[in-house]
Every structure is written in structure tokens, then in C-alpha cells.
Amino acid sequence: MKTTVDLPDGLLIAAKKKAAEERLTLKVLIERGLRRQLAKAPEGRSRGHAIRWITVNGGVPPGLDVRDRALMREWIRRNR
Image (cartoon, helix red, strand yellow):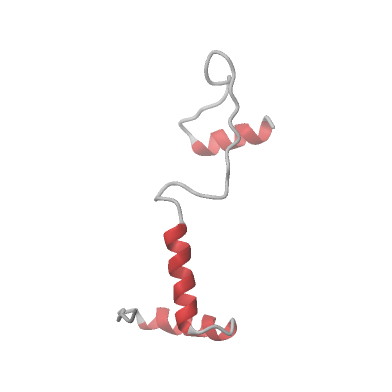
């Protein structure tokens, strides 16, 4: 399907340069970028970083703050 997209000049120039460097057509570069973007998880969620669930009787383990994602990741790294 053909369509027209209005892009800023600088972005189009950078895209053409990148496509040439990678020996791709501009169409292939744009298609890959769109597919990658559409395959991403919804805003605020990421793919590729699986969280290994740790369960204990009685609730959340001591020292684990599930409200803060960065602190939770650090706790998981320390307690592997």
C-alpha cells in the first residue's frame, strides 16, 4: 500500500543516510522501525526483562518495595 508521510527534513536525511550505510532501501528501514515500534509493550512496560517471581508465606519479603521499580530490581539482583 502506498501512502504519503510528511517528515522533518533532518529526520528524512538521517534516515536516508542510515539506510545507505546499512545497504537498505528507505522503505525497508521505515518498515523495520514501524514493526519494532508496534511490537513494543504498551507505554510504561518493557519486554525482554523478565522478572523472576519470588514468593514467601505471609506477603512481600522484608526489604522489597514493589512500589518502586528500580528498588525492586535492585532487591532482586541482590537476592538471586
